[in-house]
Length: 90
Image (cartoon, rainbow, N blue to C red):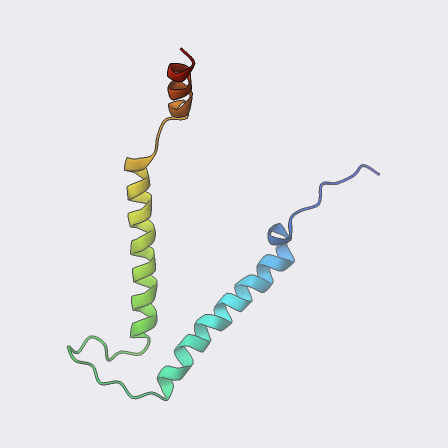
């Protein structure tokens, strides 16, 4: 029998399924306390159920998009360091 390459721990379908279930459970647990905590919204938009969970998700998504945008401006060509090394060798 030919040797098959073993998949990494995070690449196995069973592991991915368990991780997704854990993620969903954590998301549900973050919403659970809102059933028991009274809110006092100051501007009106913080009164709906799950507001802070949605706010956290949107904030995280915006930070990821800003990081990608910053990466577009900060990235260098693959040969960037080779050019500097050639100048030093001369």
